Amino acid sequence: MLAARCHTYGLPDVVEIEEIPDPVAGEGQVVVDVAAAAVNFPDVLLLADKYQISVPLPFIPGSELAGTVRSLGPGVTALAIGDRVMGASMVGAFAQQIALPETSLMPVPDSVELDVAAAAGVAHRTAYHALRTMGGVSPGDHVVVLGAAGGVGLAAVELALVLGAHVTAVASSESKRALCLAKGAHTAVDSASPDLKEQLRSATDGGSDVVVDPVGGPYAEEALRAMHWGGRFVSVGFASGEIPRIPLNLVLLKGVHVTGFTMAGIAANQPAETARDNAELAELLAAGTVVPHVSARYPLAQTALALADLAERRATGKVLVLPYA
Ligand SMILES: NC(=O)c1ccc[n+]([C@@H]2O[C@H](COP(=O)([O-])OP(=O)(O)OC[C@H]3O[C@@H](n4cnc5c(N)ncnc54)[C@H](OP(=O)(O)O)[C@@H]3O)[C@@H](O)[C@H]2O)c1
Image (cartoon, rainbow, N blue to C red):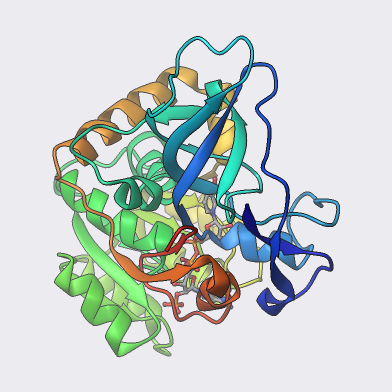
């Protein structure tokens, strides 16, 4: 099979396309023909060896996919050859085939195309947990989304609207803000505004109820300062590369709840909420209520370009790699 592999850590252009042996399904595993793999920001960090964990070289990047079951290993009981599945893995998705435990895969409903399924996994689950379980968003709440045109950000915009919130999207360019407004955000604010805090206050009728922050950096404190008493600030990631240090007096003075999560952490520690959120999200996707925005689709040969779209801040919504295109 063909796979995108890296033999050295670095920028996206370290990725090479190679012919390597097909994977073989081990005990409890299946091999999936990858129809589409979505790019997520951690893929860029893993490639640069700047993620929370280090993956030994050489490795195939790619952490999220949808496709069709090609073969079954011993002991597989829940899946059959030809089943349409989606799943996540630390690495390995930017390849024509991947071997994964059957327990890490979920069926893709008939009404959902495989590329839509790949685009609606990690980002949408992250955004929905942030809003539903961590943010406790109720209809009419003012929700501010930082990095609102990115993968997690645009999913948060879409899903906050589904939850009945008034959404303020924060993004760095005119075209990114226009996309957020086209997706239904009520207001869009320039993240580079020198008076970001004031702009957010006026966009949210005096103060927001919930902030979803996948960016960090200097924007986080401004967004927190523009919350009202009792608001929920949900930290999701640090795409800016800078982990903000929030002065605790702000939290004290404003009665704000600051929280955050990782997908693995919430799954292990709040299994009931995770199951509920995943089931609600699956219904929204199957019904077509939520349709992820895909800004670019690349063949496997251009995996480096797909990764560079995120690394260089060009991507909006999701970017896909199509290994058989
Ligand atoms: N907690 C979890 O379980 C979880 C799950 C998934 C992702 N994450 C994290 O969430 C963050 C966003 O992931 P994503 O896949 O949505 O990424 P993405 O699609 O690349 O979006 C990130 C956004 O951050 C903004 N940004 C600001 N400074 C940036 C910089 N120096 N480089 C790149 N982007 C920058 C960009 O918006 P502007 O240009 O408008 O500023 C961009 O749209 C990442 O830190 C990721 O690790 C966490």
